[in-house]
Image 1: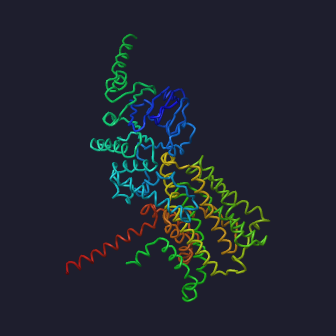
Image 2: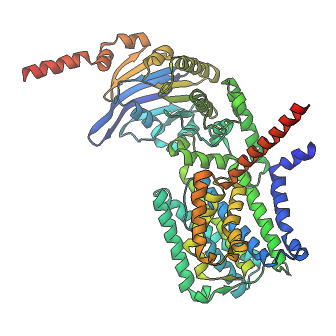
Image 3: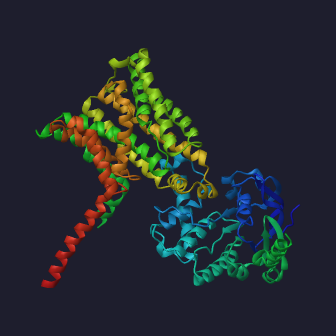
Length: 274
Length: 337
């Protein structure tokens, strides 16, 4: 079913909205410790694939196998949205969804939500277990912030922090859950060239230091070509090609999808005939 | 230095706050300008503050609105009055039942909150509250209808409290509720509720079960409202259906908006502004009774214009002004030196 070195295997994924097939029979798999890119022109269905994996949408057909934190293979579609993170699959958001009123460290601690075993009553009464858990997770959060180089800002409020810092905080939050696979939704959106370079470095650093795979759903070609080990290109919800950055760049189907040359020629031909 | 750090401990602050409030009955005996009637006003205000703290957990943290606070509070008041007076139950047992029943209803309302939000949730909770209030008028074997239900001061283990000791009980309960609230909002629960208010999608992706945390928020909000209803009926010793109207629910909303969303002291301050200030000071002004609605309205407009997070944030401005004055003095000294 699933190879030993694979962390996510998508097989025959299809979802339609009304009559529109947003994703049509898509298959690919991501290996352990791999940085994998999913690219495609506007409206290709990247975000839909993303939402199917994280169970925000339930696919019409296909299987989504995931090797969880314990090494067991799980069918993602059998889990609810809020259970996905427990398996070791965590996502970021395009517009950085942090809590503005909380400090950076508290925002990171939200990522440790699933690790709390103590009940609300234990927390309200500050019983030993709740205090111990809070303390341990706080130390862990501080450690992650230190490794990402933003420890000195930990007690600042998220509101008003520079965008690059907020992106790092969002990364830190995902790392709190000890993920096996992190899915990044257009992380380069809103970053300038220098920041995009730093982001590429950070993605590699996270993969190496935290031993996880990363799926990058991205528009920014420089970033994708720069950091990804393998790339899958899709268009109109259908598979186009898979391979290394160079292979993808040379692939005629991908070039056609992005530049639309022959399609336009086709269109011109059509219109002259009629 | 060490003493200073000790005072910065939030728990010490809560207890000190309670101790200051607890001096009121003694002050009323010593100083003639503090009338003993003030105990009823301040005690009532603190009771309302408990319910408002619950609403603040719901609205401030999880972003869910409720206009049903008064209904739940009244329900608890009637249940406790009925159990102690008609059935002769001990105070603590009746208090437990009077808190649990409204909390269960509150949790059911919480279930509805998964489907409806914002304005619609406000209307739904208002409807529940009005239905409950209507039962106060109609079920007169239980509530004594329009003539009102009488109750006694609480009694524990053969010790009957009087007005002053009940006031102490209220202060103790309020300090406990403040401490519980502080622990909850500064831990995992508070972060989960904050995340839920910020973005449902993001909170779900972080593993927050929306249903569970909405139910928790509603459960605590109604439990605090019910607790305050029990204290009310055993302190004021009377309950009429007309008390538990929409106006009271709106007053709770005004309290936390004026006092401060997501602020514990802000909520208590809001309760003082809405209940104690009109009662103690403004009632002396002729015609004010008819104008109290206007007072709340104008206050809400002013607060939203100048302190959108609540009047409790005035303290930062005061600190700033204080620092300005202090710095100027420092500068002068420096120049002289």
